[in-house]
Length: 349
Figure 1: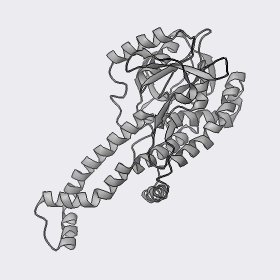
Figure 2: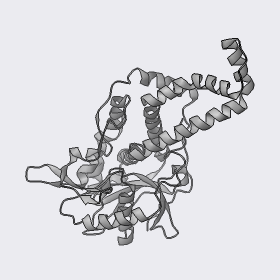
Figure 3: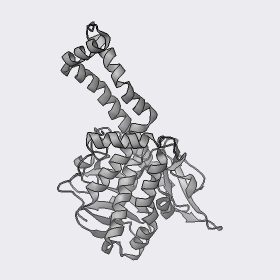
């Protein structure tokens, strides 16, 4: 079994307050430039799980994990897509993802197929960046970001009232020429001053900035690492979810995940399926290995558990029964993100 465990994570520096403010100002100038139809799973990845039809089109079978129904085969363009996933200044974000990752995925996948990728540092980086991209380009990440911002806003308001009461009193008097009538008046005054922050959140700008920032943070965290290629046993295949990248923690035998989607620093590593024959994970050392049948099943169950709405597999792969069983199992377990307290690469700005 290849060694997956990270002995120690090293994180890049976060943007300073000034840098974050400058970036918000830049994004505000391009807020209306959006891409309405956004793939949360790269088409160049989904294609590797598809089957060609007689006309050369690439098709996948979607399995809806909410309803428990296998749907009719669908072209790659129609899979792994959410309209207005990032609703603010998404055009520049799509360009960033395309130029750094998606334009290079074909070469990286070809190098996996021919066995040369572990000798190609540029393509190793493409694979690590692909994992970073799919960690943050997920409905789970956006929901977590919103939860954290709401929590920080509520708790921050109470903390400011406690810690800066006298200063707020002086600011209140300077504006109105009156003394505040208790904490309720000070709270209303503070809310006025926090209105701009709430507007930034409501517009989607904070969400947009966070996605970009954490993509870059995850890329930087993975930079010193290698990748490991985990191949399916002969005549077996991997499935892929519409939220395929995840962080993981192992149990003692390293073949069962005890947690997925914890913060990177609290996990043993990160990975995702890249083709229906190959998983890629970040790790200290480069390895290529065939996984056991037990680990194959664990990796596929994790995709079912991690799915936002759909799991996809190749037409004719006979994976429906396995996915249906894994769905039932995952519904009886504790939610996979129950213990998550921060985004994949740390707390949001």
